[in-house]
Length: 503
Image (cartoon, rainbow, N blue to C red):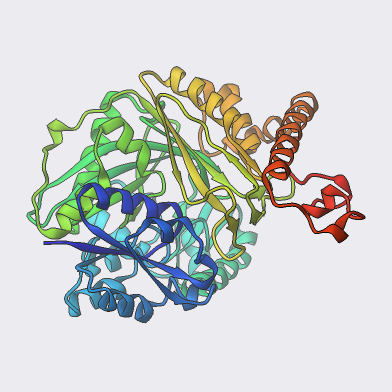
């Protein structure tokens, strides 16, 4: 039996896994870097172990340190979360060799589907539609130009081992190819340690739609329907929803069958995602497979009523899937917004710092997967996403209303976040109507980026008033300041120089 699980990750996903483990009566071990000693996931777990300095390469990406922690705490399994080592075949192999269960797919599957060229080859063999392009690695820029001329412009030059929008360049004419080819290779090498690139036909303004899949060790594979992930900035998802407002029942059925066929071709075990591009004529093409849990998995959990983490663990332990395809139904609509500590008015620059005050929305149909708390200082070393706000409602229009209200209630004082930016997205007519694709942010940038001075000023005043009240209450209940501090203003005594609040 699995009695104790080490979570090889940090932040909100580590807490998400810990919660499911608690419900399954399993002990948990958190690992943390020196920068994360006071992180929320460290406080949540039964046990915790420091695995190195702040830099990810020396901590969360250090397989030797993670395996040492696993043996020290005598764990039965390791859950990798997403990001970091979640798609690292070496970690999965080390677990196999050292008698620890890896909660994820087989290392061979990770290698086959992590390599985008091999993944394309597998999908072609499985009869799953793929975007026209190369099925082999490109050797030279001249080879790339020949391929481009044969399939037609525009094209996307992509890193074979890439992900997260890195190692991708669009070439719209022959003059672009050489430059984009070398830029993609350079970014791929620095980001993934492999400069192999390939080419796909660039589909203009598609929908980015993914299907959640789940498989066991006995060949049973099902899908848990779709997620619309087309609200993106520079290939990074911002808002996701399920079900997709673009798909009809017939197309949803065909895409679900293709997702299951793709997973069966590689004997998939565990939770994973098949990503598709869908053009304006509703032709769909395989994009890639993510052999891990996705950031946006909560919206699938909300509409399908399934705890994906629990089923990941059960499948890893050797249990059969607890349900068949016909048992899975979509109910209502769920929307997820990624709350990030970043300044959207300053080119989305990360905004780490101390959270002086945190007010999270509450009420029916609201879920928050968070990695922060009031008084926590967000470090500079990691991804700026601090939590995910998820809402569910019986109808899409009600879910949008609920998300608008939740974003208005959400207050993070002490640093800059993207909450106002998310409000603008939700209020955009194209989003409300469900008539958007991957060009949404670019097409609506003027509206989304526009500052509403009245609402901004009135909201700032409300936040300032609330914070002054907080400080005054703090003064009443705090020990008296030293006698020699009389010449220091109360603002400066509390670190607020020149009487200006940072909100």
